[in-house]
Length: 98
Image (tube, rainbow, N blue to C red; front, side, top):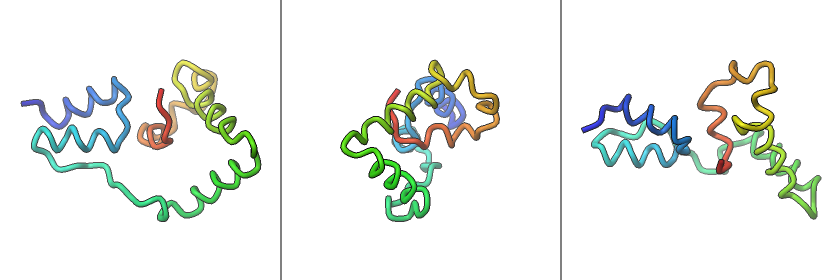
């Protein structure tokens, strides 16, 4: 039976999204630790992303690709001076698949 810490470390290494991590915790008998919120509760962050996507129509996928390139550990993230200062959870909250 893995500990909560072991599950967290494995998920970190495998870059498992937070929502999926909750499923691992539940399967191991632990309560989920990552809060899930409806999209409507994202407020200003959701509005900003929607505005950005609208500004890039008819090619909104470009925004996602730029985010992926900027935040991927093997991409531009290694060139960001303050990347290590970003909260680890914050980097994983961007809904991207590596």
